[in-house]
Length: 324
Image (cartoon, rainbow, N blue to C red; front, side, top):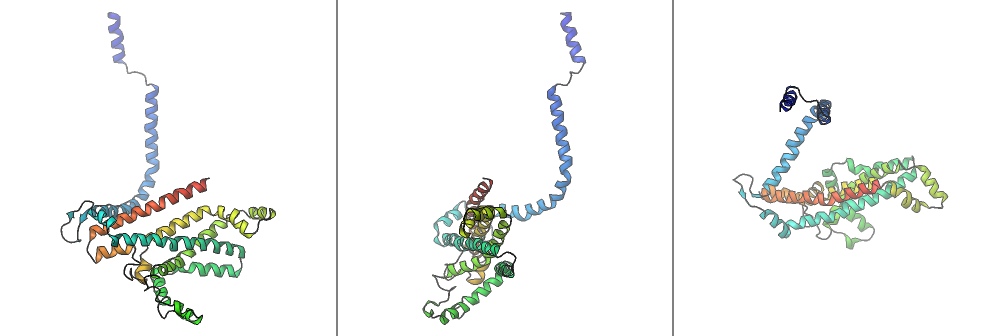
Protein backbone atom coordinates (compact mmCIF):
# COMPACT_ATOMS: atom_id res chain seq x y z
CA UNK A 1 0.00 0.00 0.00
CA UNK A 2 2.76 2.45 0.92
CA UNK A 3 4.54 1.72 -2.41
CA UNK A 4 1.40 2.65 -4.45
CA UNK A 5 0.97 6.02 -2.65
CA UNK A 6 4.62 6.88 -3.30
CA UNK A 7 4.32 6.24 -7.05
CA UNK A 8 1.08 8.28 -7.33
CA UNK A 9 2.55 11.26 -5.47
CA UNK A 10 5.63 11.24 -7.69
CA UNK A 11 3.54 11.19 -10.89
CA UNK A 12 1.34 14.09 -9.73
CA UNK A 13 4.20 16.27 -8.54
CA UNK A 14 6.21 16.13 -11.87
CA UNK A 15 4.73 17.01 -15.32
CA UNK A 16 4.72 14.17 -17.79
CA UNK A 17 7.34 14.24 -20.54
CA UNK A 18 6.07 15.51 -23.96
CA UNK A 19 5.13 12.69 -26.30
CA UNK A 20 5.32 12.49 -30.10
CA UNK A 21 1.71 13.71 -30.44
CA UNK A 22 2.50 16.91 -28.50
CA UNK A 23 5.48 17.64 -30.72
CA UNK A 24 3.31 17.10 -33.81
CA UNK A 25 0.63 19.49 -32.52
CA UNK A 26 3.21 22.16 -31.71
CA UNK A 27 4.75 21.78 -35.16
CA UNK A 28 1.35 22.13 -36.88
CA UNK A 29 0.54 25.19 -34.78
CA UNK A 30 3.87 26.75 -35.68
CA UNK A 31 3.27 26.01 -39.38
CA UNK A 32 -0.16 27.67 -39.24
CA UNK A 33 1.29 30.78 -37.61
CA UNK A 34 4.09 30.91 -40.16
CA UNK A 35 1.67 30.51 -43.10
CA UNK A 36 -0.59 33.22 -41.66
CA UNK A 37 2.34 35.62 -41.28
CA UNK A 38 3.51 34.84 -44.82
CA UNK A 39 0.07 35.23 -46.43
CA UNK A 40 -1.09 38.25 -44.43
CA UNK A 41 0.49 40.88 -46.74
CA UNK A 42 -1.12 39.17 -49.75
CA UNK A 43 -4.53 39.10 -48.06
CA UNK A 44 -4.25 42.80 -47.20
CA UNK A 45 -3.42 43.58 -50.84
CA UNK A 46 -6.42 41.69 -52.28
CA UNK A 47 -8.83 42.78 -49.53
CA UNK A 48 -10.07 45.92 -51.39
CA UNK A 49 -10.70 43.90 -54.55
CA UNK A 50 -12.51 41.19 -52.57
CA UNK A 51 -14.66 43.84 -50.84
CA UNK A 52 -15.48 45.46 -54.21
CA UNK A 53 -16.36 42.06 -55.70
CA UNK A 54 -18.54 41.17 -52.74
CA UNK A 55 -20.47 44.46 -52.78
CA UNK A 56 -20.92 44.92 -56.53
CA UNK A 57 -21.07 41.29 -57.79
CA UNK A 58 -22.03 38.80 -55.07
CA UNK A 59 -24.51 41.03 -53.25
CA UNK A 60 -26.55 41.89 -56.42
CA UNK A 61 -26.46 38.21 -57.37
CA UNK A 62 -27.91 37.17 -54.02
CA UNK A 63 -30.46 40.01 -54.16
CA UNK A 64 -31.57 38.90 -57.65
CA UNK A 65 -32.19 35.36 -56.41
CA UNK A 66 -34.16 36.80 -53.47
CA UNK A 67 -36.27 39.08 -55.71
CA UNK A 68 -37.11 36.16 -58.00
CA UNK A 69 -39.31 34.68 -55.27
CA UNK A 70 -41.36 37.87 -54.84
CA UNK A 71 -43.95 39.79 -56.81
CA UNK A 72 -42.72 43.36 -56.75
CA UNK A 73 -42.99 46.45 -58.92
CA UNK A 74 -39.88 48.05 -57.47
CA UNK A 75 -41.75 50.64 -55.38
CA UNK A 76 -44.54 49.17 -53.24
CA UNK A 77 -44.22 46.37 -50.71
CA UNK A 78 -43.13 43.06 -52.19
CA UNK A 79 -45.33 40.01 -51.71
CA UNK A 80 -44.09 36.43 -51.47
CA UNK A 81 -44.73 34.51 -54.71
CA UNK A 82 -42.75 31.34 -54.11
CA UNK A 83 -41.85 29.60 -57.37
CA UNK A 84 -44.69 31.21 -59.35
CA UNK A 85 -42.25 33.33 -61.35
CA UNK A 86 -40.30 30.23 -62.37
CA UNK A 87 -43.49 28.31 -63.22
CA UNK A 88 -44.60 31.16 -65.48
CA UNK A 89 -41.12 31.17 -67.04
CA UNK A 90 -41.55 27.53 -68.06
CA UNK A 91 -45.17 27.81 -69.25
CA UNK A 92 -45.41 31.25 -70.87
CA UNK A 93 -44.37 31.16 -74.58
CA UNK A 94 -43.55 34.88 -74.45
CA UNK A 95 -40.83 34.13 -71.86
CA UNK A 96 -39.60 30.87 -73.39
CA UNK A 97 -39.27 32.41 -76.86
CA UNK A 98 -36.27 34.64 -75.98
CA UNK A 99 -34.38 31.63 -74.59
CA UNK A 100 -35.02 29.67 -77.81
CA UNK A 101 -33.84 32.66 -79.87
CA UNK A 102 -30.65 32.89 -77.79
CA UNK A 103 -29.94 29.21 -78.39
CA UNK A 104 -30.39 29.74 -82.14
CA UNK A 105 -28.00 32.68 -82.05
CA UNK A 106 -25.24 30.33 -80.84
CA UNK A 107 -25.00 29.08 -84.45
CA UNK A 108 -24.29 32.61 -85.72
CA UNK A 109 -22.34 34.04 -82.77
CA UNK A 110 -20.21 30.95 -82.10
CA UNK A 111 -20.15 28.26 -84.80
CA UNK A 112 -19.76 30.56 -87.83
CA UNK A 113 -17.05 32.86 -86.31
CA UNK A 114 -15.03 29.91 -84.99
CA UNK A 115 -15.03 28.12 -88.37
CA UNK A 116 -14.18 31.31 -90.29
CA UNK A 117 -11.61 32.27 -87.65
CA UNK A 118 -9.76 28.95 -87.96
CA UNK A 119 -9.73 29.09 -91.78
CA UNK A 120 -8.67 32.75 -91.86
CA UNK A 121 -5.90 32.15 -89.32
CA UNK A 122 -4.56 29.20 -91.34
CA UNK A 123 -4.51 31.28 -94.54
CA UNK A 124 -2.86 34.26 -92.82
CA UNK A 125 -0.22 32.00 -91.27
CA UNK A 126 0.58 30.69 -94.74
CA UNK A 127 1.11 34.28 -95.91
CA UNK A 128 3.88 34.70 -93.33
CA UNK A 129 5.02 38.28 -92.64
CA UNK A 130 3.74 39.77 -95.90
CA UNK A 131 1.90 43.07 -96.06
CA UNK A 132 -1.28 41.28 -97.16
CA UNK A 133 -1.21 39.21 -93.97
CA UNK A 134 -0.98 42.37 -91.85
CA UNK A 135 -3.84 44.03 -93.74
CA UNK A 136 -5.97 40.90 -93.40
CA UNK A 137 -5.38 40.74 -89.63
CA UNK A 138 -6.30 44.41 -89.25
CA UNK A 139 -9.45 44.18 -91.37
CA UNK A 140 -10.73 41.05 -89.62
CA UNK A 141 -9.96 42.32 -86.13
CA UNK A 142 -11.40 45.80 -86.75
CA UNK A 143 -14.97 44.86 -85.61
CA UNK A 144 -13.56 44.04 -82.16
CA UNK A 145 -12.42 47.63 -81.57
CA UNK A 146 -15.62 49.22 -82.90
CA UNK A 147 -18.25 49.88 -80.21
CA UNK A 148 -21.15 47.46 -80.57
CA UNK A 149 -23.58 50.36 -80.72
CA UNK A 150 -21.75 51.80 -83.74
CA UNK A 151 -21.64 48.36 -85.36
CA UNK A 152 -25.39 47.93 -84.85
CA UNK A 153 -26.16 51.34 -86.39
CA UNK A 154 -23.87 50.68 -89.36
CA UNK A 155 -25.47 47.32 -90.11
CA UNK A 156 -28.94 48.83 -89.72
CA UNK A 157 -28.09 51.18 -92.57
CA UNK A 158 -26.56 48.40 -94.68
CA UNK A 159 -29.56 46.05 -94.25
CA UNK A 160 -32.27 48.69 -94.69
CA UNK A 161 -34.70 48.58 -97.63
CA UNK A 162 -32.57 51.08 -99.57
CA UNK A 163 -29.32 49.96 -97.93
CA UNK A 164 -26.12 48.90 -99.63
CA UNK A 165 -27.00 45.19 -99.49
CA UNK A 166 -30.27 45.59 -101.40
CA UNK A 167 -28.72 48.06 -103.85
CA UNK A 168 -25.96 45.56 -104.65
CA UNK A 169 -28.53 42.78 -105.16
CA UNK A 170 -30.48 44.97 -107.59
CA UNK A 171 -27.29 45.64 -109.54
CA UNK A 172 -26.62 41.92 -110.01
CA UNK A 173 -30.27 41.22 -110.93
CA UNK A 174 -31.59 39.78 -107.67
CA UNK A 175 -34.39 42.32 -107.23
CA UNK A 176 -36.83 39.62 -106.18
CA UNK A 177 -34.80 38.77 -103.10
CA UNK A 178 -34.45 42.30 -101.74
CA UNK A 179 -36.28 43.08 -98.53
CA UNK A 180 -35.97 44.87 -95.20
CA UNK A 181 -33.70 42.24 -93.71
CA UNK A 182 -34.06 43.41 -90.11
CA UNK A 183 -37.80 44.03 -90.46
CA UNK A 184 -38.86 40.70 -91.95
CA UNK A 185 -40.07 37.96 -89.59
CA UNK A 186 -38.16 35.30 -91.54
CA UNK A 187 -34.82 37.10 -91.90
CA UNK A 188 -34.57 39.31 -88.80
CA UNK A 189 -32.91 36.72 -86.54
CA UNK A 190 -30.39 35.49 -89.18
CA UNK A 191 -29.60 39.13 -90.04
CA UNK A 192 -28.85 39.87 -86.38
CA UNK A 193 -26.79 36.68 -86.31
CA UNK A 194 -24.72 37.92 -89.26
CA UNK A 195 -23.88 41.08 -87.30
CA UNK A 196 -22.79 38.98 -84.31
CA UNK A 197 -20.70 36.70 -86.51
CA UNK A 198 -19.01 39.72 -88.12
CA UNK A 199 -18.12 41.08 -84.66
CA UNK A 200 -16.76 37.79 -83.24
CA UNK A 201 -14.77 36.47 -86.20
CA UNK A 202 -11.81 38.79 -85.47
CA UNK A 203 -11.43 37.54 -81.90
CA UNK A 204 -11.56 33.90 -83.02
CA UNK A 205 -9.00 34.57 -85.75
CA UNK A 206 -6.62 36.21 -83.28
CA UNK A 207 -6.92 33.31 -80.80
CA UNK A 208 -6.24 30.77 -83.53
CA UNK A 209 -3.23 32.75 -84.80
CA UNK A 210 -1.83 32.83 -81.26
CA UNK A 211 -2.22 29.07 -81.03
CA UNK A 212 -0.65 28.44 -84.43
CA UNK A 213 2.48 30.45 -83.62
CA UNK A 214 3.47 27.91 -80.96
CA UNK A 215 3.41 24.96 -83.38
CA UNK A 216 6.87 23.53 -83.94
CA UNK A 217 7.80 24.04 -87.65
CA UNK A 218 9.48 20.64 -87.64
CA UNK A 219 6.02 19.05 -87.40
CA UNK A 220 5.01 20.63 -90.70
CA UNK A 221 8.30 19.55 -92.28
CA UNK A 222 7.76 15.99 -91.06
CA UNK A 223 4.22 16.04 -92.46
CA UNK A 224 5.46 17.24 -95.87
CA UNK A 225 8.13 14.53 -95.91
CA UNK A 226 5.34 12.03 -95.33
CA UNK A 227 3.56 13.40 -98.39
CA UNK A 228 0.86 15.41 -96.59
CA UNK A 229 -0.78 18.23 -98.53
CA UNK A 230 -2.05 21.57 -97.11
CA UNK A 231 -5.40 20.12 -96.04
CA UNK A 232 -3.76 17.09 -94.41
CA UNK A 233 -1.31 19.40 -92.58
CA UNK A 234 -4.20 21.51 -91.36
CA UNK A 235 -6.20 18.53 -90.08
CA UNK A 236 -3.30 16.52 -88.60
CA UNK A 237 -1.00 19.25 -87.26
CA UNK A 238 -2.74 22.63 -86.97
CA UNK A 239 -6.11 21.64 -85.54
CA UNK A 240 -4.73 19.44 -82.70
CA UNK A 241 -2.26 22.21 -81.80
CA UNK A 242 -4.96 24.89 -81.42
CA UNK A 243 -7.43 22.69 -79.55
CA UNK A 244 -7.12 24.70 -76.35
CA UNK A 245 -7.57 28.04 -78.13
CA UNK A 246 -10.52 26.52 -79.98
CA UNK A 247 -12.17 25.71 -76.67
CA UNK A 248 -11.62 29.24 -75.36
CA UNK A 249 -13.09 30.74 -78.53
CA UNK A 250 -16.17 28.50 -78.35
CA UNK A 251 -16.81 29.34 -74.69
CA UNK A 252 -16.41 33.10 -75.18
CA UNK A 253 -18.66 33.22 -78.25
CA UNK A 254 -21.34 30.99 -76.71
CA UNK A 255 -21.52 33.30 -73.69
CA UNK A 256 -21.69 36.24 -76.11
CA UNK A 257 -24.71 34.64 -77.83
CA UNK A 258 -26.60 33.86 -74.62
CA UNK A 259 -26.10 37.29 -73.04
CA UNK A 260 -26.44 39.32 -76.24
CA UNK A 261 -28.10 42.70 -75.76
CA UNK A 262 -26.33 45.66 -77.40
CA UNK A 263 -26.50 44.65 -81.04
CA UNK A 264 -30.13 43.52 -80.89
CA UNK A 265 -31.28 46.54 -78.91
CA UNK A 266 -29.73 48.89 -81.48
CA UNK A 267 -30.71 46.99 -84.64
CA UNK A 268 -34.20 45.57 -83.96
CA UNK A 269 -35.13 46.20 -80.29
CA UNK A 270 -36.46 42.64 -80.24
CA UNK A 271 -38.74 42.99 -83.28
CA UNK A 272 -40.45 42.48 -85.57
CA UNK A 273 -42.91 41.08 -83.06
CA UNK A 274 -40.66 39.07 -80.77
CA UNK A 275 -38.69 37.31 -83.51
CA UNK A 276 -35.34 38.67 -82.25
CA UNK A 277 -36.17 38.97 -78.55
CA UNK A 278 -33.40 37.55 -76.33
CA UNK A 279 -33.28 37.03 -72.55
CA UNK A 280 -31.13 40.10 -71.87
CA UNK A 281 -33.56 42.38 -73.71
CA UNK A 282 -36.61 40.70 -72.15
CA UNK A 283 -35.16 41.25 -68.66
CA UNK A 284 -34.67 44.92 -69.50
CA UNK A 285 -38.27 45.35 -70.69
CA UNK A 286 -39.74 43.43 -67.74
CA UNK A 287 -37.78 45.37 -65.13
CA UNK A 288 -37.91 48.93 -66.46
CA UNK A 289 -41.07 49.09 -68.60
CA UNK A 290 -43.49 46.52 -67.16
CA UNK A 291 -42.24 46.94 -63.57
CA UNK A 292 -42.13 43.17 -62.96
CA UNK A 293 -38.95 43.01 -60.91
CA UNK A 294 -39.64 39.50 -59.59
CA UNK A 295 -40.27 38.01 -63.03
CA UNK A 296 -37.24 39.80 -64.49
CA UNK A 297 -35.10 38.44 -61.65
CA UNK A 298 -36.38 34.90 -62.25
CA UNK A 299 -35.46 35.17 -65.95
CA UNK A 300 -32.02 36.53 -65.00
CA UNK A 301 -31.43 33.58 -62.65
CA UNK A 302 -32.59 31.14 -65.36
CA UNK A 303 -30.23 32.79 -67.87
CA UNK A 304 -27.32 32.44 -65.44
CA UNK A 305 -28.11 28.76 -64.89
CA UNK A 306 -28.42 28.24 -68.67
CA UNK A 307 -24.99 29.81 -69.25
CA UNK A 308 -23.44 27.54 -66.60
CA UNK A 309 -25.15 24.45 -68.03
CA UNK A 310 -23.82 25.18 -71.52
CA UNK A 311 -20.35 26.51 -70.62
CA UNK A 312 -19.20 24.23 -67.80
CA UNK A 313 -19.31 20.99 -69.86
CA UNK A 314 -17.52 22.78 -72.71
CA UNK A 315 -14.84 23.98 -70.31
CA UNK A 316 -14.42 20.53 -68.82
CA UNK A 317 -14.28 18.89 -72.26
CA UNK A 318 -11.66 21.36 -73.48
CA UNK A 319 -9.55 20.94 -70.35
CA UNK A 320 -9.61 17.15 -70.51
CA UNK A 321 -8.77 17.20 -74.22
CA UNK A 322 -5.80 19.51 -73.68
CA UNK A 323 -4.54 17.41 -70.76
CA UNK A 324 -4.72 14.27 -72.86
